[in-house]
View (spheres, rainbow, N blue to C red):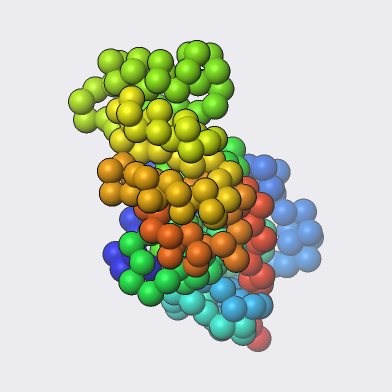
Length: 286
């Protein structure tokens, strides 16, 4: 697992996401709390894991309640990237009861999703063989507008991020190849266009396309939907010459074998696009 403390998203990015979420959920206030709870009432509550999970989202908790009421105090009890067992306390909040209730759902929605991603990513990382240098990476299959948070959650789970967006790297995929005419044509045009600081990655569907991509000058080759036998042949042919990434049809059960075969990167959209949210609750204290 990556031992470095994951770098959180920029604070202005986090605040923009939180503010938009609060407008969506509480743009006109909290009718129930305003009806039932005196404005001066104060309370203390604890965010608690309902299942074993890897937590991600401490900054979210702070920003949600800071945006509602700067006087609310958020005490983080565990660090992002830390595992917590079922029943374990994650954070304690204290302040006006109305403020705690107004921010409860937004805070939970975001940290439950982030923690689900971190937990799933950690399972993939832990499945790799001991001392493996293979990286577990995400993809661009993220929830619209939540990519910074979801990618941070991947890092909290010990994974790595793929390209941030379409402008951050060249990745030639099947439709680019079809439009360009061939693997070679697409790669040669990309090499001529790209700055010298940019690597060229190309997706391939067959071993013949892999050979063509390497011969044309690709520095990273994405083996798309290759079975384990084909991955083994790809590593035997070109391992160490180019960075080999495997994607498509990735399951937790395949991770160990792919790591044993010696691929450099395993990327999976499942880390973000279909992950189960972690079960976290907020319990008011007496």
